[in-house]
Length: 370
Image (tube, rainbow, N blue to C red; front, side, top):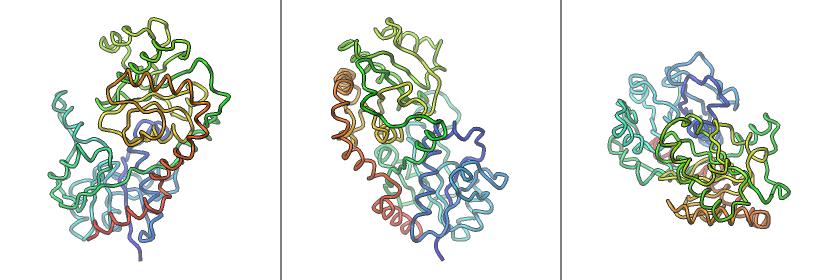
């Protein structure tokens, strides 16, 4: 009999579509559960609802997965990966006491969140489990800052886990919206609509650097930029810093800068934007990048591990970013087809169907099971 695996998920999701596009962790839960179910040593993979749910879960129903309450999972599965939610301490302790293995999956920059908790006077940072872990898996973009997290978990089994992805959520969203997904040459124009999707929820991904990149490109070639849409920024309207920062730009003076609500990426591609500009700090791999690249749109970014695809610029260097954006707007129509094989190779390296990615997870499971 194969291993029975569970991946934790938050119990209360009021709007599933909103949750999928407002949290990379929710997508990560889906991808990890689907990947685990593909492994030869795994007989089943369920979502473990934390706190206990009502016997089902919207995420499980959407993606054909089983949902288990914490108590059921603690009694029935062999390995629980804490990813989307923290299990109750007493329940996870009972689970480990009966021989179950518990893994902490670090998919967000927990140390940056702890730093912010202190700086902003928040009562809590990243919650630490008192039940202990048999392994800690950290994705590559967070290894440098977050491996220190392992010390408090009291496990010597700390390992690098691949960042995983599938186009499933993007394509499903586009189909449900009836939205055109893929970039086409005829969409190229002299004047582009630029999208900034950085979420503005912590210091790692904010509007500041992408806006400065767009501003630099606008000063270089104003005829190439029709407008800049800053998504996930409408809540900042009226905040003095935000208003002052934006007002200092030529884009704002020319009425080409707009703060928008958060929207699913699939709803914005093609119909509303022609290119994506982004900047990250210690968060160099994320689903926005994979989805934009998969759909074929110009991605102007500073992620070092993706320097070979999209249009890369140096960290915290809006002048270099302006160069990259201007180049993207001028040349993407001619470069897109030739660049596609490299893009697909980059995406395949993270795909949940990739045998090498699956084999790495088999090794991680074997180490965690001891």
